[in-house]
Length: 512
Image 1 (cartoon, rainbow, N blue to C red):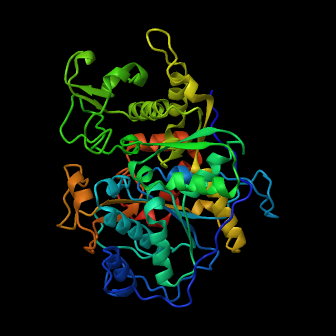
Image 2 (image 1 turned 135 degrees about the vertical axis):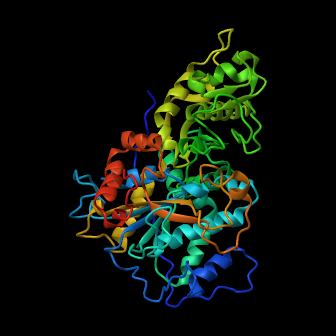
Image 3 (image 1 turned 90 degrees about the vertical axis):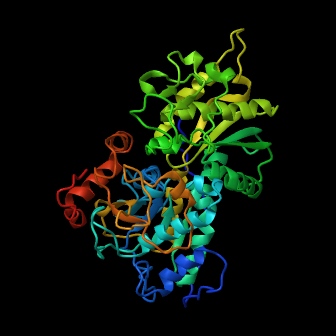
């Protein structure tokens, strides 16, 4: 069985905050469309997004930790954080003491599900809109406002601000971390932003000996792959830590995987029985790109409409569409192995970075598919991939190293809450704002694809409302997966729904 990587880096260097004594003025003549949302936050006192940062309590250790992602995938990062136990809670020295290290911290989680997946914005040529989403995510964490439910017309103002922001999204880290840090500098507050990419690169290199030749695989969104964020981070750390072996990086954009996990209708419809218009996977063009000669390697599961075909017999399909998360995985892992095989490398794939926060949900499936590929033979008995992959491939979850970076930062800045409770954590999600007449949604109140990725950035509107998690906005299948794979996180979500005064305002709506 392929082992799941659980080695923590002992030494992580956390760069100090870039605080400012005075708020910097935003360049009003800037051609950056993102400056409009920043101007609204910093200067439009009558606008929804305005925050007065003059007395922001960034040094208040009792404040929660903020974390955001484009959907529920960031809960895998939160899972790593809330289960973290690598220090003694009394002395703060390295060494597990059997107590969770963040037990006295509370968290505010935001999943921007209405605008997910973030990985498609750069590919659709709308990076400015992605940056606007990232700034709005941070604005929510830094502000007091939220809505009780999708039909609520008046925002509540009793949410706490946060003392640190964790970007639980690889794409947002790759394209927006520096942008977000610049915004916080403009706001004039001393607040750290922690991303997942450097943490993932550290974790991957920790699986490889200093003088070893090896291949590191990166399975991520297409946008994260295109940013080369992991490649540059791996090579920078490799040089700093003086690795002498030949380390090669092969990346695969996993279009459709995260989307299937969060049940995006552009990529998966569970009650579909035939190929359909509007299908977008497994690449952004909607071209199926399934290589017929690789069908045996894919080993797709055709049961229960997990693959959609326009013929009664699958061998006779002229159109074939993937309709299941594991089948998306099969497609992309075979594509990754084909990249490595065709490169003529002399090294083997030893480590795979799960470069999207949704992918740890599917760790067991990834392990199983790699085992199949290791043993996969052609009809004449030839082992196709064995010489290009290790028998036991380490799966690196960047969330584990992100947890350590967060702990180290809080300890170094004396921001660890001594008397708080993790049970005070809160969980929010974005839903389309049906009170905004400009939004364009489908029959399920979701943004249509063209509107989601095609609308113009810089138009300051409430496209979404941010509301507490509930059964009204999280499907039963997604909740069941959270409950099964991260029971502690699920317990915290359930506790928020059952005991927090904020969710009392859900009225008749179902709680979790």
